Length: 140
Image (tube, helix red, strand yellow):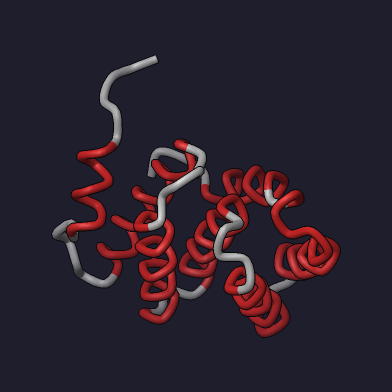
């Protein structure tokens, strides 16, 4: 990968404050639990963060954060469930693209490839192909 998912998660989480409104404090508590624990405690906090994300489908930074921490779950416990979750979250994120940060879009597209590769699905699906077509080419 061309970026650090943990650092991207921190940045996305900071951006998510305005997206979560009254649930921000709960998200902070869950993130702190997730980041400072391991095993079942961290997994429960992770699942609660994903549950919170389902209530905020337009919270783009928070959605990206959840994808990044799913990659962290993959590195902690390399099981198909985490790859599948990451793939599902990434595909949903890329399919509904309006108003998203380009850097998050690029990172999520890269993670989608990694989630797919982890499941042995090396060919790009049509969501990634469409994303690549729509992504401007060139440098800064």
